Image (cartoon, one colour):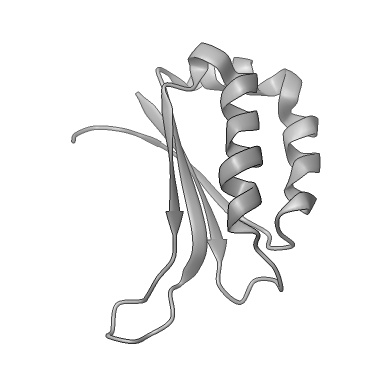
Amino acid sequence: MIKMSVYYPAGGGSKFDHDYYRTSHMPLIQERLGAACLRYEIDKGLAGREPESAPEFVAACHVYSPALEIFQEALGPHRAEIAADVANYTDIAPIVQISEVVGE
């Protein structure tokens, strides 16, 4: 299983609409990926390591897929549409990482 994580750094832009992200963007990804999206999770940053410190990231998401090839094949035809939707919720340039899930 693989996991695509997308992180939105705090201070990386001026806006992030958590409601749109939760109710529109992530459901769009799930719909377009179909069976290649086993599930997804959304994180909303609350704090950093130290008490009362700001979070490093305002938000993140994690999309789980059976395999890298399955994920890439499902995403390919929809990449432009999904990328175009980003402007509807943020101006932050995200950090993306794809990982192999090796334990729970």
